[in-house]
Each structure stands twice: as structure tokens, then as C-alpha cells.
Length: 275
Image (cartoon, rainbow, N blue to C red; front, side, top):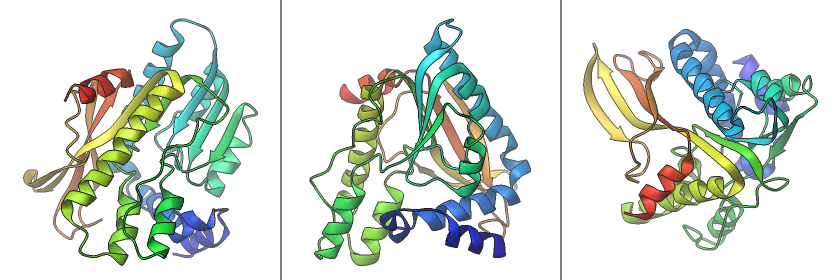
């Protein structure tokens, strides 16, 4: 607890990200990873393997690339940082905030740059709407990719997560938010992210948790779609992530995520546009 309190108090963070709970969530995620490092190991290895395979496909045999971007770089748990930095001239890590541990690790890599930004463009309008007693903003858009177009970009376990914190903030103020409004807002954030990612790079890849499963003794008790009923196409790669074995989140039940990954985001955006 002392470590988490120190991280919360000393991590550089935009006031809006702190207000909406992103700093607390980042600190809690790091603590969970330290507790569940062994359970997470297969997932972490699969993520890193996918990212490097996607990067190699983007490079198409070139010895080095130009610029690459990681959206949702987080605590660098799922990211093969040093390997990516070695393959590109510049690597830009984008997230709402960057923990002190991330800053220390990146400081050793001169071609890696940290950018703290809201990739949805929705958080400031959301906070303003809440301050005015309204629920959901309607006028917002993702910001331009930092520094212009990239040769390669990857979104790391971000698609399903983007609506969670904004919706939590709204529901604290508007507990009776209609389910249809909640889903429409979540789908807009997710679709905007896919389009933003596709427009940001020559080649863009993605992995995200797709389904949450509660299990007891290996038997599935409950399953829930994690990607807001978007109807994503079949992934190029998939794996399971034992994110919270009992009693991490429930005394008796295990929480497992099903993760999907796509090498080319255009296969996702094309499938969604045809729906």
C-alpha cells in the first residue's frame, strides 16, 4: 500500500486525468500485475510476440523503420519496448499519463518519446458537460497523431477500455443514464479509435480483450462481450488472459479475458463499415 500511495502522489499527471480516475487505475493495474505476474505471463508473452510480428510485417524486410507509435503504452507490461526501439528510427509512446517507472525505462532509449494525450478527444468535453450538469458530450474528435503520419502503429489493449473511465465518471453524476445512450457513446469512442488508428499510420495493428469470462473450477459461469457489441471480424491471433484468478477479484471465481489481435486495422474498419 505504501508503494501505491507513493506512486499516486508523485506520478506526473494532468489534473483532468487525475480527476477522472486514470491515475488511480494505473497505480492499481501495476499492483495487480505484481501480484499476478505468473498468471499473466502467457498473455504478456503473446502480446509481445504479436506486436513484433506486426512490426516486422509493416517493415517488410527493411532493416530499420521510420517512425512507429504505440497507443495505450501503459506500464509497458505488454510491450516489447527495447525490441521495437531497435527496429524504428523513432518510437512514440502515447497514453493519458506515463508512470515514473515508464519514464525511467524510456530515459535509456534516446529514440523513444513519450506523449501524454487523450486519444479520444472526449475527456475535456466530457468534464465540461458534467460541470454544466449534462451527461454526454456530442462535439469531440480524436486529436491528430503526434508528429504526423507513422510507418507503423499499434493499439495495445485499448479498444475495449476507452469508454470505461468516461462512463464511470458520467454514471457517478447520472446514475440513470439509459443503456442505449451508454452503448452509443461507447461504440462511438471505439469506432473513432479504429478510424484514428487507421489514419495515423501506413500499417496499423490492434489487440484488445474481446470477452470476459467468470469461471469456477474451470467451468464458465458467465460471459460478457467486452467490445461494446461492435461485431468485430475474426481476429488473426487470439489467446486467453487469466487476469484475476481467485481470490484477486472474487473469493471463489476466476476472471479470464479472451483477447483478439489483428495485423491490419483495415480488415476491422472494412468489416464494420459494411455492417
